Image (tube, rainbow, N blue to C red; front, top):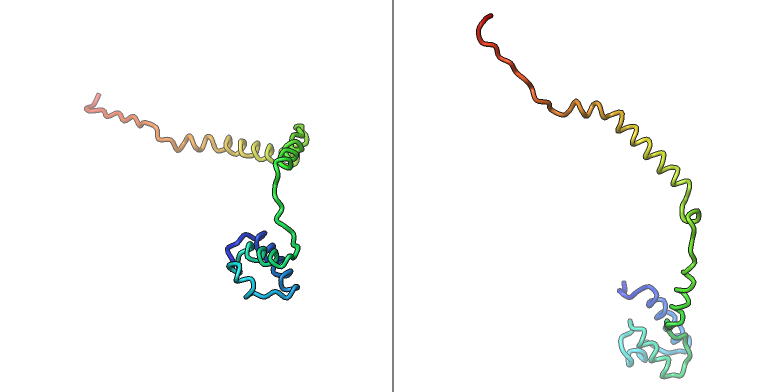
Length: 123
């Protein structure tokens, strides 16, 4: 299994398909480098003046546009899922009621100081 990222493997497979469709072989590709590298197949296709889809490059303009689109502000009612809010509230109330009902029992578990009086002699 290759340790290349999935997107890179898809790209290299597409380049290989183009090369094989044009009757280019692995031996011809080996002259440009390793068969597992995308650059090898790109160089092979370029040397035969074959067109292929180049790797898309990210420009600063795309990043700026994306950051402008994310400036949309959402209000509280879009942000909150009321079903989950009600569930969380009821669970919190239930937990609080359970802890209150167990409170007297937990007080009995706390050791209290024991007073022992010893009387010597008779009255």
